[in-house]
Each structure stands twice: as C-alpha cells, then as structure tokens.
Amino acid sequence: MDVSAYDLLSTAVLLLDSEGRVDYVNAAAEELFGSSRRMLVGLPANDLLGNEGTLQAHFMEAVAGRFGILKQPLSISRQGNPIPVSVSVVPLRDVERWAALIELRVLEQHMLVERHQQLGKELAAQRETLRNLAHEVKNPLGGIRGAAQLLDSELDADGLREYTGVIIAEADRLAHLVDRLITPQATGLRKAPMNIHEVCERVRMLVGAEFTAVKIVRDYDASIPDLAGDFARLLQALLNIARNAAQAMTEYSQQTSPTLILRTRVARQVLLAEQMARLAVVVSVIDNGPGVPAELADKLFHPLVTGRPTGTGLGLSLAQEFVLQHGGLLECDSRPGHSEFRMILPLETT
Image (cartoon, rainbow, N blue to C red; front, top):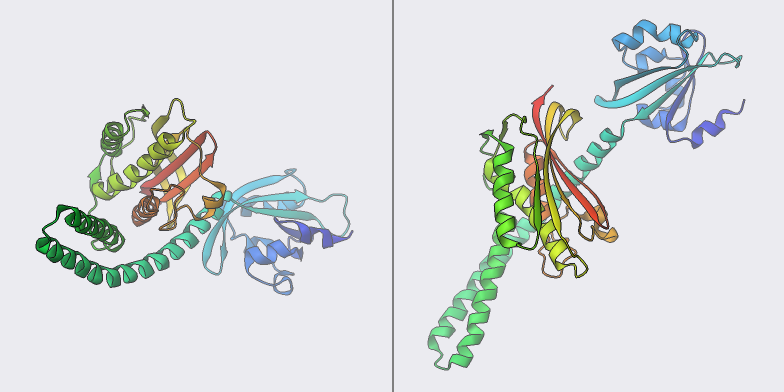
C-alpha cells in the first residue's frame, strides 16, 4: 500500500500496529503535533492523544475492531497549547501491516479562534502605531486651529471669515478623529453585573432615531442571565456594528425595505479568544443590505479600513477591540442580501 497519498490530505492520519503504537504519520500529523515523523513513529498513540479517560478505556478494543469506528472529541497538546480535535479510530481488518488508522480533525472553532488571536496581535500593533502617530498629529493640529482663530478675529470681511470657519471646523473634526484613536485603552474596563438586553434596547433606540427608514426587529432570549461587563464599551461596540449596518442599507440605492435584526442567544461550550466558556451570550446584528465587499472581508476589523466614502474605518475596529477586552470574539458572515455580525461574550468559563 502506497502511503504517500496520505501526505496530500489536510487532516492528520496515524497508522498503528497491533499494539497501538504509531507506525506511520502523514505531513498533516507532523504539523498538528509539532514533531517530526521520526520522533512520532514508535510512540504509543494513547500518549499522543493525552490518555483521555473514555478513549483510554476503549482504545485497544477499538484498535482490535470491537467498536467498528470509534469517534471521540478531545483536546491534544501541542507545545503546551491545547487544541480541540475530533478523533476517529478506524480498524483496518484487511490490511496486514497496520491494525488501525487514526484520523484527527482540528475543530473549525479552534481555527477561527487562532485567526482571531492572530488578528488581535496585528490590530494591537497597528493601533499602537496609529496612537503614536495620532499623538504626533495632535499638537500641530492644535496650532493650526489656534492660528485660524487668531486670523478669524483679525478679519473684517465675512466672506474671508467663512474660510477660517472651515479651517476651524475641519481641525475640530480631525481632532475628534485623533481622540478616538488615542483614547480606547486609556482606562481599564469597569466591569459590573449587567443585562445585555439593556445594551440592545439602548442601541435600538439610538439607531431607530437616526435611521427612521430602517425597520428594527427584536429577537431576544429573555432567559439570558446577567454578565460581568463594561456597559459603556459594550454599548459602543454594539452601536458601532448596528450603525454600520444601518448606514450600509440606507446608502445602498437598490435597498427597498432595509431591515435590521437584534438577536440574543445562549451558546454552550464555546472556545473564545483566551478560554473555554461553558456558557456564552451571542448578540447578533443581522441586516439585508449589500454585504461586505469581497476585497475587505479579510481586513474588515483593521483600523481605517472602510468600504463607505464617508466612513472613518474606526467603528468595527473599536468594536473588535472592546469585545476582545472582555475575552470575547466578534465574528462576521456576509453575502449580498444577508450580513450577520456576532458579538460573543463569556457568561461562565471553565
């Protein structure tokens, strides 16, 4: 049997002898365990799988084919980091050399968390650069505004003073933008018990007052318990997401009945950015707008990235930052006619 074909697979494959020892691993398995083929061959498979109780009790029976195919979710360790996987032990009755095959699939949620963690690191570096730049910009910007005010006081013609008014107004607008770049992490979180629906209702009222053409639908799970969070920051995060959705729908000329849904649900056993949450609250903002442009999908949460001519590109970046500060995740699924942003926050951790 030519085993080289296993190297073409993206899932990790181990071939075992009758004693449950590793006789062959493919390239994906080397990557998963962070070790070379030479180091893995000969090891008891149970050692690689962490000796998990249920699997340990029935492993050799599974290798011998007494269970058919044995499937088990578990967490393996790679360089000290736990990785959730789905393990399948498949007996190979008709193959002389090997007794069983083990297939390990990394759970998609873990891959999503890894992407979020990498994104978090990238965003932290970008925000630090932007904040340093913002500090450098703020001082000369204040000088420009002060000079424009002095000039305005010396001018007699209203026509000329109109120009100084534009300078002052634009300087104020840029100063506000700079402040938004500088201040997000200026103070720590002020966590307190809070009901997520109070945040949702405040956002519903604010967005509804600003975008009267948008129909807002509430779809709440009233049984969700209180969580520990910073009310102001979670309000700002959800408001930024909802306003972005409303703006996208109202600026889209073909949109005839813009609808925004605020939905809350409880999720169980959710792997978040830093920990496993036994319970988590999922706050979804769903709209029927044009969707996220394909060219922005991979950098949607980066600062100063926007698909709108009048956007600053800070709303979603700040929302992501505030959610990450709470140990949560911000996800997006988008296609034309349906976009869903999910703010996932831990309720109970394990």
